[in-house]
Amino acid sequence: MWMKLCSKCGERAEIELDYARMHLCDRCFVDFYERKVRETVKKYKMIGKEDKVAVAVSGGKDSAALLFVLRKLFPDLSITAVHINVEIPGYSEECEQKFRELARIVGVDSIVYNTREKLGITTPDFQKTVYKDRICSPCGTIKRYLLNKIALENGFTKVATGHNLDDTVEVLFNLYVQGDIQQLVRLRPVAPSTHPKLVTKIKPLIEMTEKENLLYALKNQLPFKEAPCPLASGSRSRERKKLLEMIEGKMRGFKHTLFSSHVKRILPVLEEGVKLPSFVECSSCGMPSSEDPCAFCRRIKMVRGNP
Ligand code: AMP
Ligand code: ZN
Image (cartoon, rainbow, N blue to C red):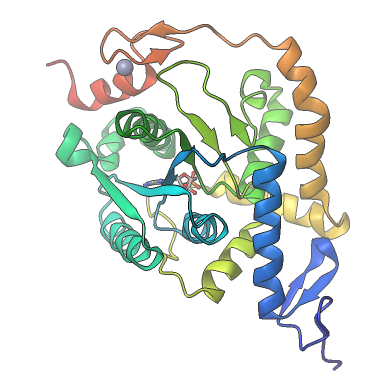
């Protein structure tokens, strides 16, 4: 068999990136990855010099890569790593451990928020509610709310998450199939603050594939938890991902193209035409929301019951 050579430097290639028709050696891959993240950050004007960025780190590969690459690309930027421990047995403890290890290696301040200690609830509590078969939904709502709240209370100006291209395209595909315009208009690289209590959200890895994030985390020997969350059912999501993988196999660059068409061509039209619901103040927590009580307070109440 022929030895593949790096498309950039001609050395022996270790990595194949199908969508870009490239073979890369380890060094050129790391260089390529970092350039691409820098381009994404610049293209969507994600970060300014004065920003104080809260990087949401789950303990998984994507957000590990995110924290490491942001520190490397922007050494003078104010960065704090934030982790939410939702107390899933056999999972969350190790995620927090990986998080602490990573924050130490990268050399950033860190905040750990434990939902049992602070709120008296955990994600497994939702197994007793109507969410028992789709526990990711309340868990996601709670984490999103808390990340915003933590950012607000600590004066962070941006919340960065490690959402990758594969996950984004899977959600995008689903939203198009369902014609969910309200959610489609929210699916974007930057969600600017639309209320003084809502901090701008940025997704610097939104154009990086899952494989690229994994390789970057591995090449840099970052600590991360490999096993997926044991409570995530995810079978439908896995099926959809397989389907999209098949399309990618027949149409090279399909995922990148779908995402870029969405951002460049569809989003500007949607943003003009779709009216997002206006805010009311949640009577329970005071945060802006489209409903009162807000989604977070309703979920919490579901588990705690009426006081
Ligand atoms: P997921 O929806 O689990 O793929 O997570 C998407 C992004 O949300 C991750 O890349 C992280 O940036 C953030 N995130 C998820 N879970 C947590 C957590 N427990 N603590 C902090 N950030 C998280
Ligand atoms: Zn509320």
